[in-house]
Length: 358
Image 1 (tube, rainbow, N blue to C red):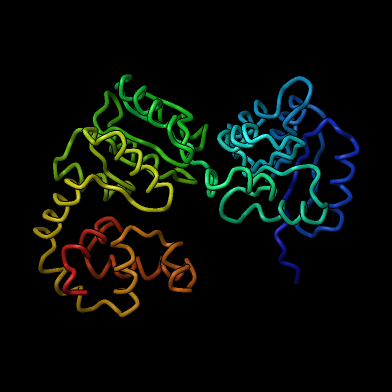
Image 2: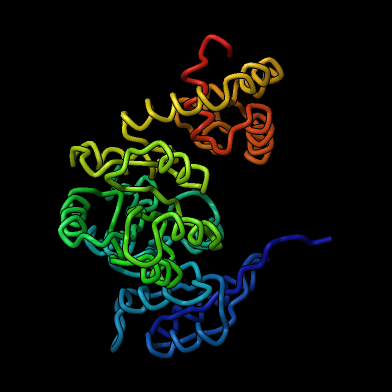
């Protein structure tokens, strides 16, 4: 039985010979099915709405609507397709602009046809698919996909400060701002960012209510609480609702940027004072339960708990232990249950405060 995953692809390019060449290449690939062609951005966007392709191959320079404009519009569709820019331009600024705009890859038209098709089919792998020349030119600036960030906070000066901070980063880009939870939730649905910075105290829909709603989205973005509150009940409520971090607004800007970079690499993040408060809270709430639970952890669960304590993601743990990511998820689920904890953040703090027991 053939279980090869077939991707439905739309081509948007004003060069008919290139479109014909891609069709011929697709005829030899069991993973690619060309479902439509367009010679302009406007036509391509209309076809994308109608056909709902999984992947769009998009030229950067076309008459009328430009490639970057089309990219932005495509990424606002529901569902949004993957988009690979296929262009003659090897300029670094073009590649960076496309990747910051949400492109899932940047390939050059002068690539070997077989290699080009291999790169297109590698779209599901980690990070953007890049031509070797582009990867070399970008260097370490795009080792992983640039993380698209939405800020939800009712303080305009803070939002402006975050914009200025993000301008110094090659790993994150702020793609949207909202001053209310309801507006922010709608923006996240439309833009599908990778990360959300969320205030706890806002008029209307509270930060905690917004967090619950964000975590029910598919796919759910990573959400970091950025707040003035260091109250124990706020910290626990946010982390138990699925927050991927908890940072205080009085954090030094440089440290805040470092924390956001940690988040893009799969780590959870917390202000140092928050870690201490959470440790005390967990110790007071779960002492008896946790002491009994620690004894019941398997050797593999203890090993994974140690990796969690240093902030490593499931993917990183799986790679280091040479096991499947799904297996790591199962072990994490079991150890959380045994320890009576609600999240991997709580597990990390528990591991730090009970180092002798593991």
